[in-house]
Image (cartoon, rainbow, N blue to C red; front, side):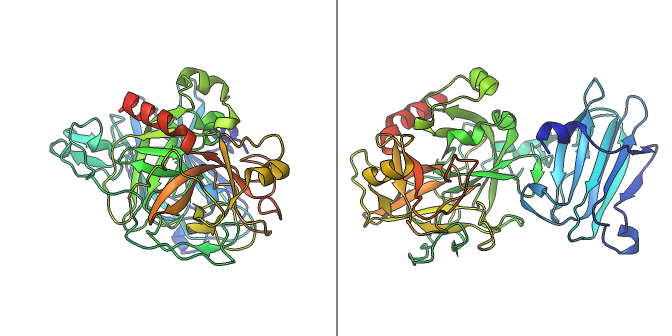
Length: 449
């Protein structure tokens, strides 16, 4: 089902008039039973005229899957024409901050598949006179947390998403060396591969960024990226090609995380202030057509606020412009992408990626491979390499004992970045080359910082 369909299509709801406070339970919750398989239950909570609906999650236990594609509870507001607008889709067990409708109503929809069941949800609903989540005198964060105004720009991420440190003259991140993880990555082994391969040590790739569609919680993972300084991430342009992903407010960026469905110690969350598609395509044009040059499949992301450098969150170094790479270099790709039945993809994976010659890649990949702007890397064995969801992730090499980013994942399948088959024999992955983009990267950061 497309995003547009999810926005507007749900079963005929049970109408609940919100006069005072009440509770909404998933089927079976009050009997301490799991919710039934293969159902769609819809509840429309309507406040009196001029009022708004507030939802508070007391319990949440929904089967957690990628993109909440199996079981989910979704929350829909309404626009001025009465059309449903998806606000959030939840699975897993992370309790969200309260929701308050902008209209007079919320629609809550439980959707389940035919396999597996969990406890469900318990939501308290009430009516209030404003659409504000926070009380007067408190700052509402992007994640709907509430903090005191006195904590704005104090150098601490009190919101948990950087909202209180946005547009501050004082940065919350300290200077640190790049490319030097406190936790040493696991060494290369023959079975390293993201398509079913080796789980990384938590914190060993501290520049790894997880690009998520923000309305899916806990994990709307779509692409990878790499932190190159306190407020900028490198990724692939094709990650933003779909209509819903072209605007900055569609995204949530996780750094320092390891597991898909649970929050990790040291994890930091940010939102996106700006997306720059090479070589600075005007946003109004890109948001309209989503077109870019695949020879330059690279993008820069400006975070809403700087991150704080820790042992779990550190930047990767940019390469020297004249570095010559070879098959003997120690290079890796990392990501949370699909494993195609060869192992769990719930944690960050790493794959040893030897550099392949441009001549070989031109023969294997064909005319789409441009040696001037692309790097070919990865094992020639089957079931090795990056896959769907690994797009935009970094190819990093240890050069003179320092890790440097040399590419971002572009062609990650035998096809395109989003379609085709992963891990085929004799099909290495293609990465957009960073060395030829150094001037552009520095210009964009200087222009928009």
